[in-house]
Figure 1 (tube, helix red, strand yellow):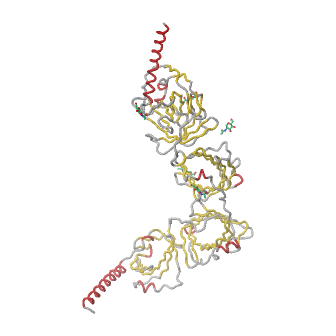
Figure 2 (cartoon, rainbow, N blue to C red; figure 1 turned 120 degrees about the horizontal axis):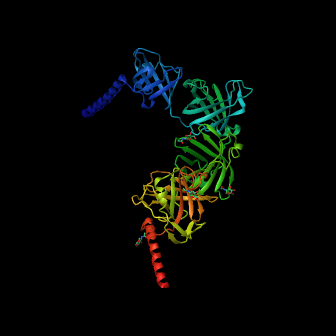
Figure 3 (cartoon, rainbow, N blue to C red; figure 1 turned 135 degrees about the horizontal axis):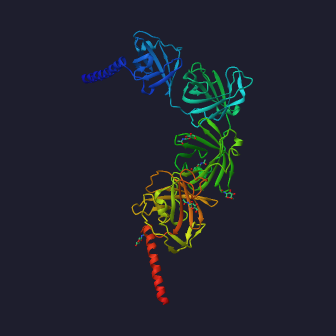
Length: 597
Ligand SMILES: *[C@@H]1O[C@H](CO)[C@@H](O)[C@H](O)[C@H]1NC(C)=O
Ligand SMILES: *[C@@H]1O[C@H](CO)[C@@H](O)[C@H](O)[C@H]1NC(C)=O
Ligand SMILES: *[C@@H]1O[C@H](CO)[C@@H](O)[C@H](O)[C@H]1NC(C)=O
Ligand SMILES: *[C@@H]1O[C@H](CO)[C@@H](O)[C@H](O)[C@H]1NC(C)=O
Ligand SMILES: *[C@@H]1O[C@H](CO)[C@@H](O)[C@H](O)[C@H]1NC(C)=O
């Protein structure tokens, strides 16, 4: 070999040695446990929580050398031990360890661990739950050692979260150890070992008060499709008797064994397409969201505190031919509580719907009948899609607003002084009841009183309501105060009528301090010239009397049709008309008297 080659070889070896030495050096000093193991762990029989942090493994001491899953740890009393840790899941560590020895090398110490050494399990405290490997509903039989409790059959229901199951154990008269209890299982870890599948979970029930009572290990197996077809059994599950996985080897031996059969699903119908076509619906104040999942068969209702109710369609009770209203018997799950409730959905417009939900009951037969559901008394919840289309507003025209009352109180600006600004009209307007448009012309205008028009103005002294003039889908409140050009505009999204009362859903659009929310305007024709309004900010409340009760109350008198207001403000036109007509009258009167003479 060439000398240069030999030199290069030595150099490479030197580098390798250097690296190796550095590695060895690290092993002798301090070593760290994997970062993802850091945290607080529970181990059965150990009173204090076990903490893994950096090189520290709680009471066992600190790590001074490691290789793969083997760790050499030493405590303050110079007790050296080898700990072999297997990560089964991010929430479960299992380990074997040696006794205390004097200073030894990692490998020597670790080789003294025999195959039959005790295996300890550590479960992460405050672990993030995982989806359970089986989802209800199931029926099951169980055995606690003295016979199978088959009748009555027990049941497993899925909770709102996939990570929880509700196990309802029944007591069998012939089985001594059987007991009627309800346990909630929260799944925390699953892993596979050989042919066995393991599950670790926390079991919550009235007698479980400590981690020692709550942590349980399970072995489960899923039956093959063929065997399931034969006896209907889908899963076999064995549960540990304590907070360890010791002694659990198969799904048929354990402190408690269970045999799970799939129960017939309660999800038997679909929500109508017009409803499920939009994934999300919101209440007017955006505090609650209704969303559709799983191919339109599941409805999730979430409020701002994150509380969630899952609803599936169990039975269609009644549907109008055009599907504008459907009555559904639904099964709900809230947390791990479940039951039935009757719901009626009303399609009000493309992007507007209402729902009535009855009281909750455990019995399917009860849900849609009184006292659980009564169409006449159950409140309506108004829902709108996230980005509703705008629609033409009804009652297009210009109105004088009288006595605007906010939040049940009169606003200062809209009191008496404001009213005297209004003029009385003799009108031959009439309402076309189909198109909700005003027809006709102003005949004559009589000014009744003249007062200081602008006294008592403030920013919200609305006096005009302009509907559908600047744009067919816009409704605007305008102030006549010269110092303020405050306009509150609403975009209309559609509405409906019930026995002469109209409901209109609108979103504030201009300079609104209200953020994302919508309003329901409720109004009634008092006479062909007067509309009584109320608005409500949570629901289209049926108990509100337009013009009398509501969040915003006012009466609106028709004062004219839309004229082209895109060039000049309505106010200017209004006053122009005000001033010119008496003048015209005067001229005409003068001309007439001249002719007559
Ligand atoms: C669910 O609704 C969507 C519309 O959002 C529709 O395209 C789909 O066909 C529906 N799925 C089923 C299974 O009805
Ligand atoms: C959410 O719903 C629950 C149950 O209906 C209720 O107790 C809670 O107050 C609601 N939270 C909010 C913020 O509305
Ligand atoms: C409308 O009024 C009639 C008669 O007063 C009543 O029978 C009906 O239930 C009312 N409809 C609604 C939707 O309020
Ligand atoms: C609106 O008019 C109705 C009928 O005249 C009346 O009962 C009601 O008090 C009025 N409301 C307001 C806010 O002026
Ligand atoms: C505004 O008025 C002018 C003439 O006064 C006219 O040319 C223009 O088209 C008008 N604008 C609109 C939007 O109607």
